Image 1 (tube, rainbow over the protein chains, first blue to last red):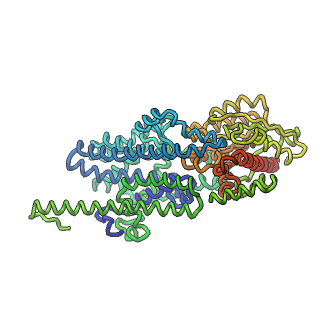
Image 2 (image 1 turned 90 degrees about the vertical axis):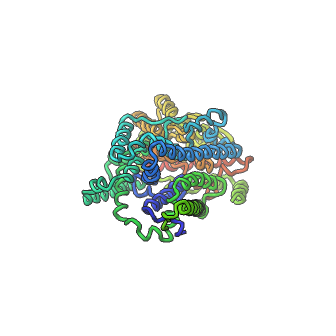
Image 3 (image 1 turned 30 degrees about the horizontal axis):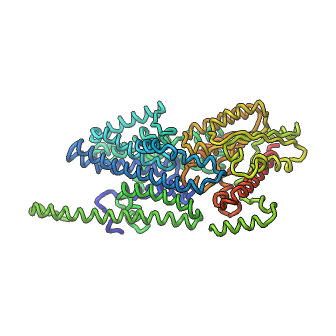
Length: 386
Length: 244
């Protein structure tokens, strides 16, 4: 597997993106026991933040290069092609959900579950459901992260001219975030609000883009007070642990004065990326960059390889992961939810994600080799060294 | 797995009713706290306990063989045994497809009429199935707690029924979290964890409505409601004892 991992880049990003993808896969299987090893136990922010931020960071390189070489229009087309891929997956997931619900409806006809049967109500007006699905307004359970990613990429097209000025990008994107938080603006689904408000979450993505695009001077200016940043991020990480404890352990909840505990419990929303979640994530991200050196050996150790490899093919693995979560839920519905089954689902899912990433890496490697051969043939004086 | 479930059903059918109506569960799922001051006072001072139950389809009796088999009736029966000398009166209201905001209106209407000392509010399913805003859901719960407290009653929230299909097709998480949060914050409220209980009963083969053969559906629903009613009554009685 090791030779499939490209090392001409910051593989820390790949490892953490791969791990976040695995966490999202587990997190979208209700009642799955392995949630205890996912990022969410560390504090209010979870794998969603990691994934969105790193998606932005990677986008800075992918589309930034296109932008520098071929201009805004070319980069915009590149983003549109990405969006189209995600949109196809979204429509496919809608079909899979329809199949699951209509197939289960018959056996689920037990009148003891009258209220639950309403989940199939959309089948009575399929024309509405299909239009809602195509316009991203139909977002049943666990089908909310693809629409989020799609709309964020749409916003990226708008923000492309700012990608060359990362600090401006943060400013404009941040202003939108603040405005959205203050006014409570969000997008509507057919039944309510978007679970992930893309107008708020775009900020984290754009921070990722900006971090990937900072010039050396800007980076140096940002890191001028390294000690203070480190202390702040340690404080943020510890506060995150405390919040996680208040959320999950009744005894920890009882330790705090009632109004404080209640505020922590009820006010930190995920929908519009509460600032506490944002700050916690940024603290963790900074700590990780300090603790893990670029190219650290363990990132290529056997236990880490599956994540580093899958993280290099984020889009494909993310799309597959959404479907694998669906299959995992289906297995727990149709077969059983015992611990061995749950571990088998986790291991099988990870294996399939790794297999897809490996295939993609092998294919990309061949394509790149072919391109090099062609380039070498066209300009014999300018032979590629690798 | 399925064979085991069928075997368990056959065994259950062969054994007398007493064995069938006893379900065991870990203590943590039914543990009560001192969150029933009004109910405890009513029972001690007036010798009566008026209980109002509101909820959606699973409260108004879908799937059982008879209206008397639904859990509110079972709670009444069990509370009368557990609280000797107390006149227990249970009133159930609600209907299929009612959301938390719908049920909130129903509670407001029923409070002056029923004058309950304790309100059991079963909710969350319809809201999750329809994907309504979890914040709106939580706000309705908070408003319900305020109304019930003003009417000098305690409140038990009851979450969703467990079903494997429901788990796979609905995202109950945010709604269960909201119920947990609101119940935890109220001095006179608790969350009765029906989802966890039913999941435990299904996984241990004690009661499994979802996998029962069609012919056994009503009987299995009866057993479920009997077990639920008993567990709920025991939790309430224990909570009242702790609140004295």
